[in-house]
Length: 109
Image (tube, rainbow, N blue to C red; front, side, top):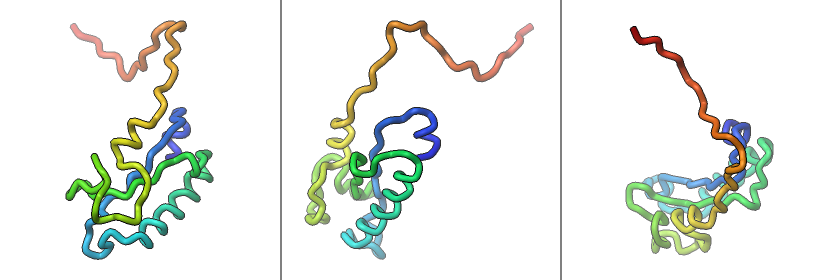
């Protein structure tokens, strides 16, 4: 998050994965615990946690990835794809010259 903020990333989505794990079992309490911890860190970095969607997912089972999951009826927010679709596209500085980062120079010959 610190690197993203330093690089100028203005919007963020937090996907809390592994909610299908047998120790978590799609627990709302665990979601709230993770959300509270990560939100406090995001606030310290410079993000507004109220504007950051926290989406509990299971990548293995596909829960809350493309559509709302029956395993997490307590979660009323958007699924991951809907949260991604809700992001605002950044304004591109098309009136300025193109800049490409130079990583290395190779001399051939």
